[in-house]
Amino acid sequence: MSIVNLSAYRFVPLDDLPALRERLRERAEALALKGTVLLAPEGINLFLAGPPEATGAFMDWLREDPRFAGLEAKASPSDDAPFGRLRVRLKKEIITLRQPQLRPIEGRAPAVDATTLARWLDQGHDDEGREVVLLDTRNTYETDVGKFPQAVDYRIARFTEFPEALAADRSRYEGKTVVSYCTGGIRCEKAALYMQAQGMERVFQLEGGILKYFEETGGAHWQGDCFVFDDRGAVDPTLAPAPPTDRATP
Image 1: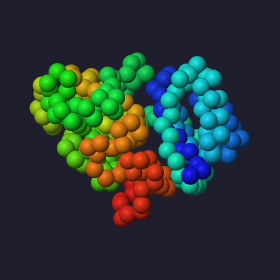
Image 2 (image 1 turned 180 degrees about the vertical axis):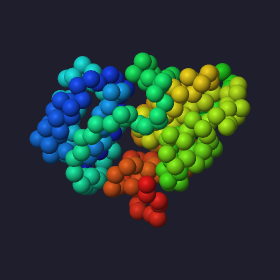
Image 3 (image 1 turned 45 degrees about the horizontal axis):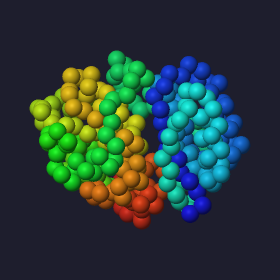
Image 4 (image 1 turned 90 degrees about the horizontal axis):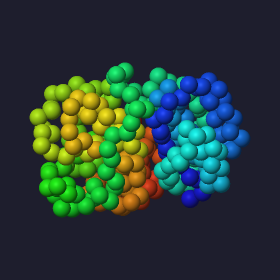
């Protein structure tokens, strides 16, 4: 497979959005990359595809900016670029929740890495003996493609429905360890921060999301594939494009 697909995000204050958008667009176009980059006052979220040397050069260039130093990108292969063009967009939020009091740029939620979560699922509890509740923060059309079969799935159509669904179900999580998860980490990080702000304890995000979990565990305890927002439709636990199915699209 000759194409590398990058997924990366970071919550970080950005106050030069129009100028940053032009710099990012110019650099990505010069490297013939395709995909989507979202910029907002709260940070960056990117999905880019191209040959390995081009994607590597772009990330090296981006990390020269101190705000993006050390930014880790999750990579998966494909034969062709799953995007038709390049878009660099300005938004109010890089992942829309419409909870203005929540400020992810002020600090991350606690995270659990993939191998630790797999071990917790193997043993049936966390390292302190608490029951582990997995919480899928994605939309219905994503969870239908694949998920942890024991996870809570609120069957939401958009992330903005998450606070109301959670409020109606708070008692489920009392005395338990909660691990929120999503495709690449951005949505479950914001969800975990929101749950903390609501006074919930023992809340973690899955570090790097499902894609990192696939990379590090091969998809242990997972059922199905993982929906992705590009022309691949989904990737399997090896991070290869999954065979086409009748899966729903957003």
